[in-house]
Length: 400
Image (cartoon, rainbow, N blue to C red; front, top):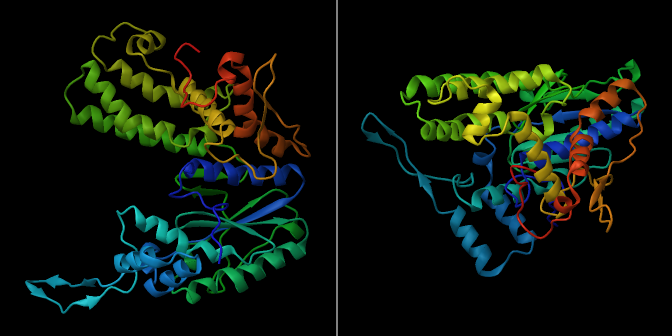
């Protein structure tokens, strides 16, 4: 048994929900541009962390070559625990805890990653990507036989993994996302663990981000704005102060993260003024409530408060992530067709914007909204001095 980080993004340094989603979406758009369809099945584990069998996990740890005192310590960390139930003043007899990794610990998530590492080790016609217990399996569909092969892999390799490892796959919560051609011969349905058809969705929530099958982001942006407005209302109702410092602190800690989560993936195109205005309106109304901002327009308030607009902040996040890709601090957006940076003494370190094959208009629009294209263009618009920075933790200055 070998351990691979290639398909895993959870609890690993340099990887995150953003790296997972960027990689997944890039593969789907790339296939669509090449005239292929993709079918992705989103799996669901029932009580994932609580169902990890200690004996099976310890065996997998041994197979990875983890031996000696470290393996003994891990075994002691997992085993020898008991649980009791208290009800109406009565206490049950102790029962041994035979499954589950301790949550809230540093080691717990790592042990779970080891547990599910071999879920996809025998796949040939599809590929799995995993963020903790959020697992999706994707297959390229060019002809009807591809869909048959995908169903066979689900039925014969993915689904049996659950019972073999004492883990429970909840087929009722499986979801299906089809991207690409809608020709009848390429539009397939798939069966879950109980033999029922998995529902195909127009939108899927993956790691907290709503993904549409055509990779438009209006539904995601509307949900983000709705959540941000609810939180803004709660802050303004709960705290009486309108002084600058506490208001900015509450904005940064309670609201901004809602507007910014995974924004390099879904932030609107500069020409999409409607969605940009939706995002900005929440920040506009909040800054208007701060003492001393009376009579100032939005741009003036931002300057006085030393804040960025939402659009500017999202552009900065894209640039920072591009820098991290260049420095190897985070994974590239694709294993085979990743972004390439080429240092040039005269023009600086520019990113080669790939010449993507655009076979249909919908795929072209999806590509034009993609991180790979928009972030590359933003990166190349920076000055040579900034693009040539290397070897440090870097964020663009406010005036850059």
